[in-house]
Length: 115
Length: 111
Image (cartoon, rainbow over all chains, first blue to last red; front, side, top):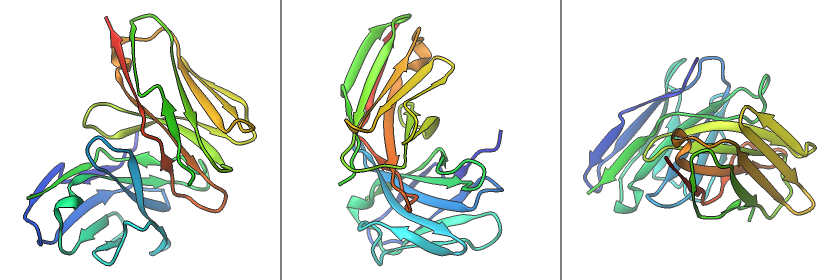
């Protein structure tokens, strides 16, 4: 069964460094998303992406964050200058709004630790 | 806000018993979905119920939706140790794709 994949599974970085989290969505999906989950808290929406542009973003998704679909398969989240509070599990998701509207399929997540 | 809130926060039952988790939300929704998360792992999609549906089944799962009370319940019948996980409800609204998650219910099935 097709699945969303994410790399790396765990990323440790120093405060102020840039990180890029990578995702490969399900191949025929058209909508892509990033969510994050701080330890012990609820999953929070960051951004949605469709047709090579951001379609919706949350207050969390400030100028330090950016997303890109550099080729036909990858979808990336970049954090330019990481802060301690960026430590969280970051989930990528994708959906096919034609066949299965609104069902989002999540990857296994990248655990980001900022020291 | 359109937050989903689950209760109970934690539930511990014996294997073979039924587990019921509830979710409430505050605004009008388009769909409500339930996800499972094993400790430290990703989110697994379980079931989606649309706002015009009242009940849906999938295997041992039964979901109900009461839009007048802005609430949903997830029933897992004949629970197994492998059902031990956190369960989250998530809602979306017309015209928006983002999911709004609740805090989740930690379910423990004791063998």
